[in-house]
Length: 110
Image (cartoon, rainbow, N blue to C red; front, side, top):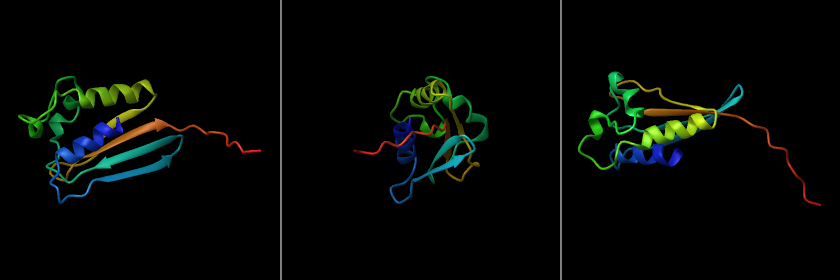
């Protein structure tokens, strides 16, 4: 899921633009954000692009099948998480992924 979001960020940004990856612990979730500085996604397309075979207006004519975001959201949901868009129009795109946080016990070597 993260690879797909990172690949999309690279695909829709210019080579000079930065791609940002941030993670934080919020309540009982780990939230990861992938941001680009590309053309952004219009408000009317933000849920539609998560449907199978759907591609945003900025993705028409490019490579890809339109399955990546549908698969990423499905994988996220199967793991008890959420995937959504947070950014405004014409400001690039930020995809946010929230996954349940788990505490992993540490094991010390003997």
